[in-house]
Amino acid sequence: MSAYSSNELKLEGRFCDLPDNEKEPASSTDECSNKLAYCVTDVPPWYLCIILGIQHCLTAFGGIIAIPLILSQGLCLQHDGLTQSHLISTIFLVSGVCTLLQVVFGIRLPILQGGTFTLLAPSMALLSMPEWTCPAWTQNASLVNTSKLQGSIIVGSVFQVLVGFSGLIGLFMRFIGPLTIAPTISLIGLSLFDSAGSSAGNHWGISAMTTALIILFSQYLRHIPVPFPAYNKDKRLHTSPVYVFQILPVLLGITLSWTICYILTVYNVLPAEPDKYGYLARTDLKGDVMSQAPWLVFPYPGQWGRPTVSLAGVIGILAGVISSMIESVGDYHACARLSGAPPPPKHAINRGIGIEGIGCLLAGAWGTGNGTTSYSENVGALGITKVGSRMVIVASGVLMVVMGIFGKVGAIFTTIPSPVIGGMFMVMFGVISAAGVSNLQYADMNSSRNIFIFGFSMFTGLVIPNWILKNSKAISTGVVELDQVLQVLLTTSMFVGGFFGFILDNTVPGSKHERGILAWNKAHEDDSSNTLESGKVYSLPFGINSHLCSSSWFRYIPFCPPTMPNSSDGCGAVANSVEPKQPLGQQEPAQVITGAVGK
Image (cartoon, rainbow, N blue to C red):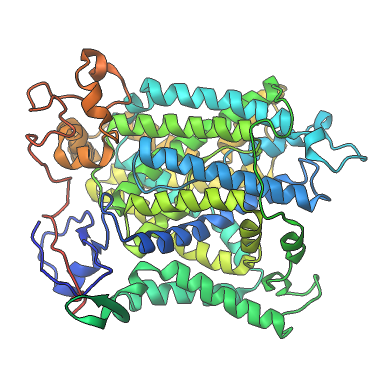
């Protein structure tokens, strides 16, 4: 990789090409707009990692904080704000630990872990059962339902661990092509339109302002440098151009909107009556949480009591786990694409699913009332910020652990108004939907077969869940557990769309070229896991590969990178003798650009 030498820019990033199939040379401006400021293996300056890590925490905050608040009533916490705060701290701590495990040992992509909405539906269904009704006398979750729920989550997560580390997901991936991945990823974003609309609808003015600011920063001002003070021995104190709008659009948009809401709250511009429109845009709605939350909290396994297991709970949670695994596989491919990484090989996907199972196991043991999964909205943030470094997500994981320990820190974020979160979702979920559609570039979309499969998968992925939600009593087989499984699966858009895409793409006659299988799977079928690019991204860390390569049985482990006996050190994934291969559709490595972007 060639580079321009420059000592002027302290905040210096390597710009990597996003996968692109353009055949004609693009202009310099278009070329720059298609590059990443930091690739997946790059390490930005520590202060930039912290700032970007905060941005990812804020991006995931809406989903993470919503889950314990939604579960509060079923967990008998609706009158216990202090225990609610402790539950929020617990889910932040577990999410941070699971994020670190996933980035360091799992899929090794910049993908953040947090509470999953796919387990929320079976959890609420279980908590609504007559035998789990909250007694009138209790306001303490440790005496009622959390132990029953977490036992079911622990058992259900064991299934995900076995599926991941046994390689079953990897075997399944050989039948998955762009016509399966595209509707699955797209429906992740499209299915959340109601959540985004509900939050944004609490004050459309505030949410529209948040959306407009993020769009302004990420699209219109991304090539405009901002002079920042810098110092070195040669030039002493001087200014250097930093492309802050490209790197921090979400954080800037949220912070500015949040500040405006605070000012409007202080001067009582926003209504103080709960029944009036715009009340939820105030920043003082959860002021009591700040005063009640302790400075330090230490969540620990079994803090709500000894976990218990019920058959109905396990089967219901299993349905959510299956949906979560399918969603995560789609997230892995979207994350790899938006972070400039090669498509994830089978062994990396196996580890990712297995680590997510371990994350659900930890979540059940700590008693979050939920599991963990890959966060789609943070994948969308990669496409906007053009920062794909996994070290940023490591910083996010550390920050979430800190937020889980310092109760006051977590309580501060509860003051972000829901319209601000809704405005952010409008942008994020749109990017996720578009990332899914972009996978169709590998298939022949002039084919009526492919048009039918994609269109039918997308439409059924929206229609069937919508009808089931409006007619929840329509599923009545006489077996409660079976009803719960069908209810969860058929109300999960990405499962329905991905299922039809998978079945139709593998049964309707069509050539591999027409289906896009040859192009999509080239990285896998052409032994991509042994390339230098894939090895740098997906190999195990801390020299684990080198230590294990001496063992002949190493290559038979489904979640370990394959070995190359002919290479110099016996490890093909990390050997310098391996011939580098460009990921499909990716251009030659880009140059280091310092201070000349967009000019």
